[in-house]
Amino acid sequence: MIIPRSYPFTKPKLRWESEIFHPNIKPPKKGGELRMEYLENWDVSKSLKRLAQEIKKLLMNPDLERRWKIRECILAFDTYISSGFPDF
Image 1: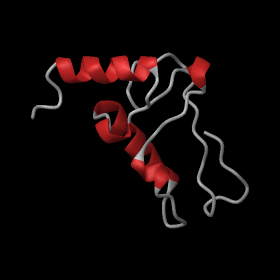
Image 2: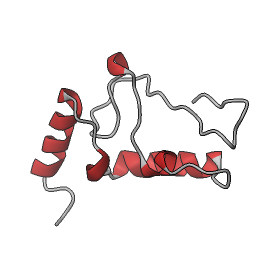
Image 3: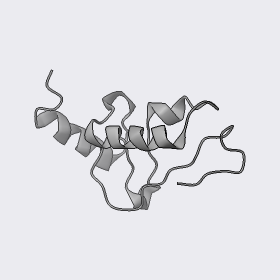
Image 4: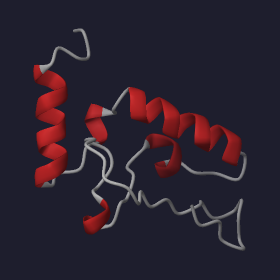
């Protein structure tokens, strides 16, 4: 996590540095970016503590609407759906 000097007016930058199989997180070799609503809708009232909670939530419950459209993330999405999660 990189917290800019202009925080909280500017959102933190997140980069995932370890391998992960997730539809909302690019692999490290492709930038490690996270796609999540909390960051996309950043405003000055948001906190780092809540950001950490939202990352934990995202890890356990991918946001299928915000998945990356790259091969690894599409495969993670397909695997997630085919395994029966979420329970529609």
